[in-house]
Length: 447
Image (tube, rainbow, N blue to C red; front, top):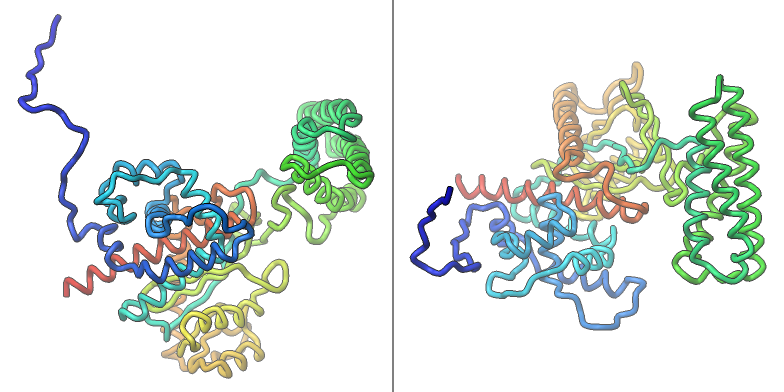
């Protein structure tokens, strides 16, 4: 059966001519953002980058538009390339409406890497300052809390870490020559042995003791390979290539991890500051005590929510696990670094309750220190103000939940290093603040 189809009266074209509404979120952002200030930040990031300043300068305006697009839409590099090529608001955001040029995903990725977490954070600070200047944000009110940024890693158990080490060693050592040629056969044999032992531990071990006995055999096999690789590197084996650098890094991490594994097998207790990932040794376990998720594996962040709903995020410094009492001081310092002075009203939960924190807050210029008291202690503010602070602090959890949603992707980002995790975290918060800026500016214009 032949289907008749009416032919078009005009020749088909691949060029679309459609008007863009000024009320579109991305179009509003294009007009609201101070692109010159962002270009200054990107230029400084390029100057401070480890790479030599060779080759042509990046197309700052267009690539910054792509970074903003990824933050607002929560898309990856290839999706950003597709949107910039075929989506009219995205082309407007990247200042490409009058051009047939486009951006490829490699250029966007390299530019994002060049910005780094520091550059992404600096851009977010510009947005916060701009929102305060426009009267959309109120920096005199600040509520703080902590949250965990989970890493996209498997559950860290000893057998899995040792098997992962052997997989990386087998892959990287196969690309190396010289002194590693004599180790390749030993590495291949040990890799097969570890995989077989892991399979036996999972499928055939009956009881904890039998499983522990099999894992001890894995431990001694891995320890011997780790020792041989360290001896080869010490003897002058070339590790200048990318595979060599990866092998050296993983071997050094395993050298620190092996005593921790042995401590677990010997005592039955987890060693302090336990390494939970070979390629991201900086991530750690964060005890949350939540129903169904007692522990999260990743990095601990501080979140400051200022009046208007805008958010600032930063990694906790100082002690490795970011103690709550120390966080109070850091949150105020981060706020003052952006706005030049402390907030008039500051709230935090009982984890930061101490006389030292209250004194530091008042000395910094906070008039109403609303740190929730522990036990029978009383609030340092009036009852009316304490009730107000409780209500405002509850909104911080809502903001944290929003940046963790699929759109912004704060938690479990597609990152394979702690630097990339931090960069993705700042980009998620940037997207949240940009959407908030566009929404509040539209509401203000409608009044």
